[in-house]
Amino acid sequence: MALRAALRFPPPVITWGTRGKSGQAAASAAYCAELVRKRDYEGFLCTLLLPPESQKSVFALRAFNVELSQVKDSVSQKNLGLMRMQFWRESIDEIYSNNPPHHPVALELSKAVQKHKLTKRWLTRVIDEREKNLNDRAYRNLKELEAYAENTQSSLLYLTLETLGVRDVHADHAASHIGKAQGIVTCLRAVPFHSSKRQVFLPVDICILHGASQEDFIRGSQERNVKDVIFDIASQAHVHMEHARSFQNKVHKAAFSAFYVTVPLDGYLKRLRKLDFNVFHPSLHRRDPWIPLSLYIQSWRKVY
Image (cartoon, rainbow, N blue to C red):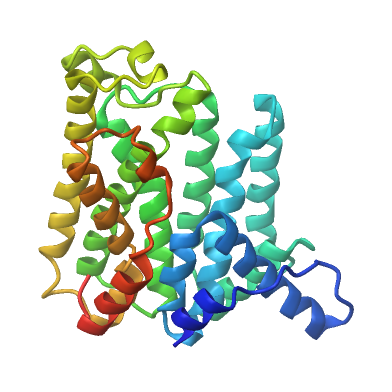
């Protein structure tokens, strides 16, 4: 019901600055949800499928991730990006000292930390990895891309599991593989955007293997060698998804709602395959209208 209601009636934009503690609490929660809805719509839909006691906390985690992910593209100089990362690093320290800064995401994150006893290491790992990514260089190989995905997307899934009260090695293994798949797919989805800015971040070793140059991607080539690069990278995402599902019988059912992010990942990979791995096809730039229905079906079937 929450999913359908959100699709029909999107939440209003909330201005930060409402008076009173209760007003500020409501405004900070709304700010996080709205930020995620605008910048991570698929994550927004997935969060609506979580139990009510976890939703606000996960919106805070996703808003935190959005704030960090936007740094790279919102600053003109690396030093400015480093300053933003340092702000969040210090904010996490203050949150764990029970003295969060007066920032809506930090305030909501503080509530989540207190409520679920979230592991600080996962939060700082996301910051550290995002900071390293400010260097604007391509991944040397697929293993580097997977390490980035593990330290960012998988870390967020570990935290999401903690909001669900799940601390289990099998769930963590599944989260690791799903996070890696998510990081790989995110990299693929960003190819047209980065190419338009004359940037290519795809693993260098795979590009060399197929004889695809940076210029091929910058001009949006649809030659076979470019498609082969995309095929190899997409195939690795699929492998991680299959590994994650191999733990399905061992993972506690309470963890499944954290893993519904597999739905949009599956959707993108299927669309990409139908388009013969033409990552530049215009239809891939549009929002998949079937994602809400697919999420609803997945949650009803109780699988990931």
